[in-house]
Length: 113
Ligand code: 5GP
Ligand code: ZN
Image (cartoon, rainbow, N blue to C red; front, side):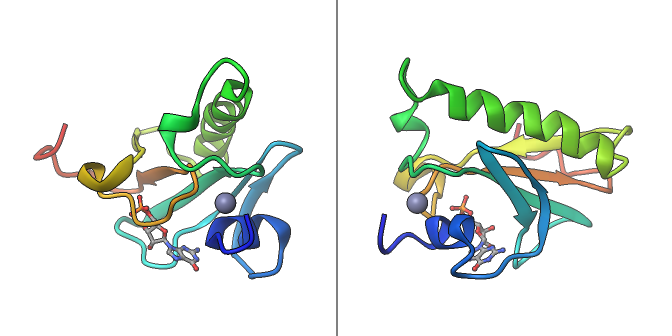
């Protein structure tokens, strides 16, 4: 996707503060962290959102989840963390490339879920 910010980050055209990478996913620090640990996990292929996850693409979602568990260990989040996916307008998604937020490093607010 030519004009997708996260595709540009995945391909290295736009730099990121990389945390983890494998064949399927890239993880990097969020540019505007909302917790002491705030990492974004993205598939290396372009999927608009969770709505694009289906039997053909779900391997990328699963690889993101596997990476999240790995990253949580690397970041010493043994006390817990939150995984968030914002989907679409009502979900508050601002970057239209599937991504998961990992938030942790402190006791998070219980106001939303
Ligand atoms: P969303 O609101 O779509 O769920 O999350 C998008 C996230 O991407 C936001 O938390 C925002 O701070 C982060 N973000 C936006 N642009 C950039 C960027 O250029 N680099 C990095 N590392 N994060 C970004
Ligand atoms: Zn993209």
